[in-house]
Image 1: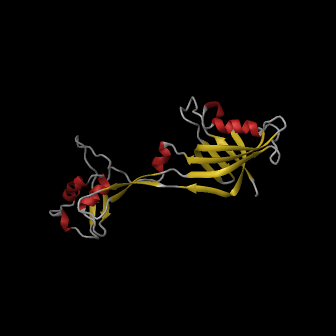
Image 2: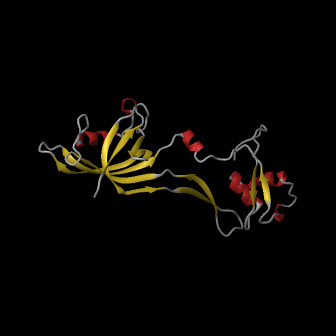
Image 3: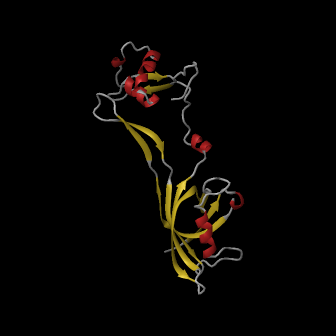
Length: 224
C-alpha cells in the first residue's frame, strides 16, 4: 500500500484558525457519497404520489487515515502521533467562539475538500517504549461544509420574483404545475387567470404556460 502525505487544515476557531495537521492516506481507497431529499405528496385521482425535490444533501468523504512516527517520522517543529491525535480529536468538540465544531479542509494536491468532521474512530496499532502511541489508524467521515452565501450561489437559481415559462408534458395539468411551482395545488387559479384559461382542463402536453410569482396580501411579490 502506497501512502501519500496530506493535510487537515483548520478553517476557524480563534487561535486554531490556519492550524495544519499532517496525515497519511491511501489515495486509491476513499469514497465520496451524495444524496438528495424528496417529499411524496398524494393528490386525488393520481395513480401515485407527486415526488417533489426538497434539497440536496452535503457530500460525504470517507477515508482511512494513518499516523506513524516511524515511517513518517516528524520533522523538526512537527507533531508526534500522540500530539496529532489530540489535535484531531478536539476538532469534534464545540469551539467556544463558533459555538460549533470548527470547519476544516482536507488538502492533498488539487483535492481541497471543505468540511466538518462528522465522525472519527481511532485504533492504536503500535506504541513507543514509554507507552505513547507510535502508529494509529483513523476512519474519518468528512461532511461537506458551505456557508449560506455559498449555498445560494451554487447552483445559481432562477429569481423567485419573476415569471417563468413551463411546458406541459405527458398527463401534466395546471393543478400539478401549481403543486410543483408553488407547493400548493390549490393555487392553480393563479396560473389559469394569468394565461387566460377559461377551462384549465383543455391544456395538452406541449402547451407552454407562464407561471407568475404569487402576490402577498399587501400586493408585493413573494417567492414560490
